[in-house]
Length: 86
Length: 442
Image 1 (cartoon, rainbow over the protein chains, first blue to last red):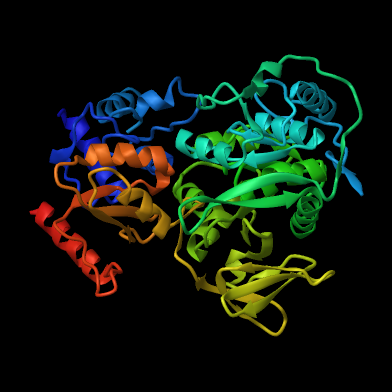
Image 2 (image 1 turned 90 degrees about the horizontal axis):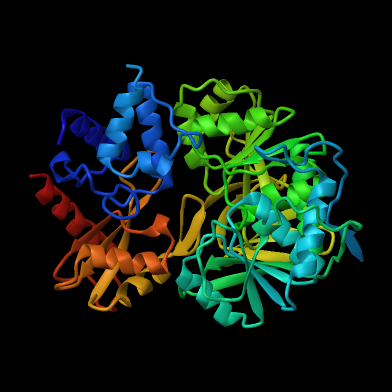
């Protein structure tokens, strides 16, 4: 996993309080939603807040493909790297 | 007596969407055009998530004296089950609906159609216009029939309590097929003439953009889960007239923060699928609920009764209330095993039944863990399932239950702790789960 992916992975675990998931369990290309980690739209909302406060990245339906952004930790990390303000 | 589908005139944009919006006459044309095309059946299963298409579908079915069965987010399994219970039915869909192998009409094919002309349909107050479903204690859906008259009476109560009229605009983040969204974002705009935003925003930026699209400071209809996130967002909010929250209790700190950041009052609604909205409060003012006009609450042996003051009819609710001399009340808790997560309802017994019916699962139980102090509860499943993978269990569950009830973690154990009468010993089950978590952490 790339450094940014580890960081984003930790952010997800911390934000969603996934007590029995460690960052070593995460796979960068594994689906985050429904399959894989099993997250849903309320979790997406929580993650979007954490992204906003930590990296200054706002996500919304206007973004080309919100589903793709959240499709995996790698996709999310790449989106953050492209759009981060801090 | 017959009362019109559209209660008050609004001469501006009535459905606010990104494509120029729809006026009431345009909406009416669509409804009449769709109504002309509907097949002859008793029931119309509405499998539509888009609020704009939902409104059109619901009104067209009502105009044809059909009952709309509301089930926007059911799995295919659930839709088939419903269709089995109501054989004289067909399905109303749009392009985003899941494919179901039943007779379907796509309402989005009307978009761009100039539609038929005609008067606003009048619906008999006794007509059953909708069937809403909740998860019953057996796991099979319980359906609640709603007459047009009862729905309008509810809308009138909302109008009066929240001061909504045709100069208002409503933005909802909740689905239209559950009672809260149905009352607040379907019936209320239909009856009051208030405009309604066609989308269902989720992220703060999208909610803010939706609020800005409204011609006046709108009323935001949402839930504590959403507000908890919005309160923590650093977004600057556009003018909002008021916020309404329901489906679970809103904590005072979140309400306070939202009032400060959004610069408006934050109200809550207490209600149920059986009764619609019963009472409201302004969260920052305290815990007490005040009944909406024309409703009273009384204590009953198995919970409480909500009485209609004018005719004495009552509905039972499975809630324990502490009722004060002036008719206001405090909510003490639910009296049954009904679980609510993100505004959706399920019975734990029903969920357990789905779990144990999966082939290969010898025994299993859902546990409700409150690991977070604020936010959404999540379920964990303990299973005795030699040789069955967690992925397979999750896939089987996903066909049967709503995604918010899918277990965050599936833990395989040798035995589910049960007491002498066969009931799950929750204390032991949670302890087992704690030990598992501690082992994983090492």
